[in-house]
Length: 127
Image (cartoon, rainbow, N blue to C red):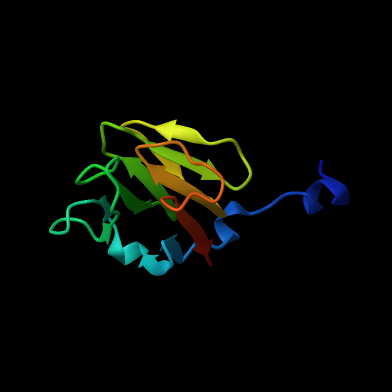
């Protein structure tokens, strides 16, 4: 039998809103990515990528943004890896795998992220 205190702490996960867009900022330029825009390719190749990153450590088709089951993911497709920092958490490196993007953070193609890094890509989810 449930009492009022138990009932009030439960959440209906299906009622929580899903992010409607992801904003990326790189070198002063901001783009908005909607779920309909995915897969959204990031890398050096101007012909195949949606978002061009000009750095020697980025692969031609380095990573992509995916949207599945009401969640944005970042998937690494490179040989050098993608370093990701979610909020204030320690950074992690993706190498051929993906991570669920939450809140805001930063990622960098092929190298670890340093403070005030000019080659890092900022991200922010909006609802």
